[in-house]
Length: 330
Ligand SMILES: NC(=O)c1ccc[n+]([C@@H]2O[C@H](COP(=O)([O-])OP(=O)(O)OC[C@H]3O[C@@H](n4cnc5c(N)ncnc54)[C@H](OP(=O)(O)O)[C@@H]3O)[C@@H](O)[C@H]2O)c1
Image 1: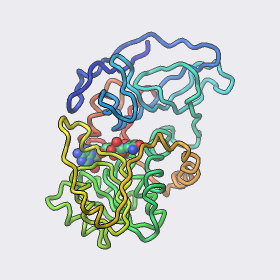
Image 2: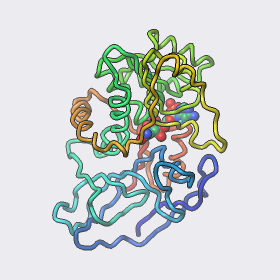
Image 3: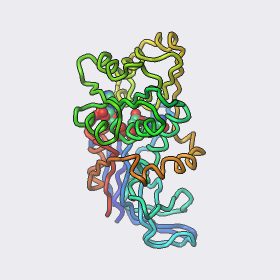
């Protein structure tokens, strides 16, 4: 059988177990030119909350009754395609299920020298997001101060480390003392501020004595408001995510925009799937840094596909510590 997690109903606020349905479906059959693969790892990402909703967005929602979407690392178990052999490990977009079959056009063979999960984390969609947002939109220059929120997470951890490689001062914002210690001691950021502090603006100002040149925003809300007050002239804000709002049931008031005018700052939203042309440059620059250990990554691995629904909510509560991944079938 092929165990699947399907979307049963659309959540209001934080998703619950009732929004999902775990089903034992028939095994997929493959035709000539196709590949059957078994999911080893499934990536859980904040954008999945958006796919569970039918509110207008940049991508179509998952239909009720369909398998939840998601990036995967899989092993080929049957191949009727000349380029794939049984045992090949591939990255794809097979979703929350144990097996998937079909055309291999979206499959990418993995570099056997790398940990397979890197393909859905530091060298996958989150890593490319960090690269495009920081390098192309943030345009950091050596000596500048780059601040990133959700700094211990999949995207934020890469943003700060690329900033350091490019000679910037990297300052993280994260939700616990343990995460802040990791960001500074393990990832090599210059400083990290716990946003649960009573006076976030003062704490951020102390960590950024020369102001902020690039604020890479992953969260919106109070952290964005605090960062806006410290912008230097000509600052850039890659607007990557607003995770503090993804489960909001009412629209949240935005921060005051006056600091953008005063500092002549630029804020630009971006969606990584519009920038896949940058993947070769990303692999070329970041691949060797990861292999040499100059960019480090932490993974938070949850075992069992049936635990994916509860684990997804951890992203919105800060329970994950590193790239959140479900080990489905190793
Ligand atoms: N634009 C794009 O194309 C694109 C692509 C990928 C990801 N993203 C966005 O990038 C952001 C980070 O994604 P990720 O995959 O790297 O996730 P992640 O950082 O690994 O995990 C999410 C983290 O967000 C933080 N968080 C949750 N609720 C928060 C709140 N109310 N206020 C402040 N922080 C909160 C938590 O860390 P703390 O414990 O530190 O609070 C949590 O661990 C998300 O907003 C995501 O939607 C955008």
